[in-house]
Amino acid sequence: MAVYTDVSDEELESFIASYDIGALTSFKGIAEGVENSNYLVHTGSGRYILTLYEKRVRPDDLPYFLALMEHLAARGLSCPLPVHDREGRTLRELAGRPAALISFLEGLSLRRPGIEHCAGLGQVLAQFHIAGADFPMARGNDLSLPGWQALYDDVKENADTVIPGLKDEIARELAHLETHWATGLPVGVIHADLFPDNVFFLDDKVSGLIDFYFACNDMLAYDVAVCLNAWCFEPDASFNVTKRRAMLQAYELERPLTEAELAALPLLARGAALRFLLTRTYDWLNTDANALVKTKDPAEYLRKLRFHQRVTSYRDYGLGEH
Ligand SMILES: Nc1ncnc2c1ncn2[C@@H]1O[C@H](COP(=O)(O)OP(=O)(O)OP(=O)(O)O)[C@@H](O)[C@H]1O
Ligand SMILES: N[C@@H](CCO)C(=O)O
Image (cartoon, rainbow, N blue to C red; front, side):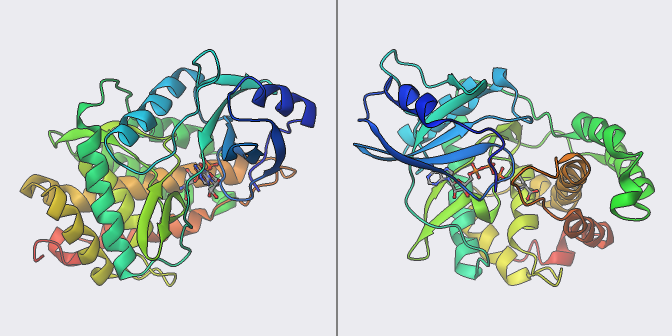
């Protein structure tokens, strides 16, 4: 359960009183998520999500994330809206942490998305990329190559205690990506963490996206690669070409990928796999045993990385024939 910071009844009551949303009636910690502390809050006017931003979020980045949600919602994308307090602020402080109250989104995330859900995801990912095109703020991707190197430096000493041989395997992959990483592809605002737990569905249709706290400006196709990894592998680690096809066909109905983007996908998917292998390894080694959080399995992303290492051309996973 991702609640790292406890909030007392009194603290929350006086926090909520500074908004025009009625009085606090109840609240409880939310079990899902690994990054931030989240509470479901009920007031006289309905349900809200209260987020207290934890370790991996830099406070300076919060105005970008909150303004992005407002920007996307204004362009018709279904995502939470930050609530303004009586002084017009969306970013506040609570229990010593930066905090924001955002609107509650209807829908449920899916544990085992099917083919039609991958299509829904592909469409909404492209809509996100299009809606972000005129977002005026910028934020670099601090979890791209230099960030991976820094994470590796943090974990290398103990990486082999997580998975034997992991230290050298990551070092070899980093060296490969340093030499071959893609450049010159179309860039824009990317979500960068659009896993199934961050996409809500109602009646098998996407009802909204959440968790914009890794959003940044980077290659749009890198976001596609993150989703290939997160949506198109089966629990037995096999790659599902039908899901891949459904996802990319739906994406391309909104925003066609260039030849260069398609050709770069296997490499971008390696990078995306390494990114989550590294953060999961870091969390495995650094999460306080008392924290109420379910740490995610690094080995899942090592298997995905190895899969992409074996791909010699994007045609190997059925790309270029949709
Ligand atoms: N706007 C919202 N409306 C409804 N539920 C929400 C909303 N935002 C968050 N939640 C609930 O809180 C959970 C955790 O939210 P979120 O994914 O943002 O947390 P996180 O700690 O940043 O997680 P992650 O591990 O995905 O980075 C979600 O799975 C969902 O159940
Ligand atoms: N989506 C991430 C967790 C949040 O960064 C993962 O599955 O590792």
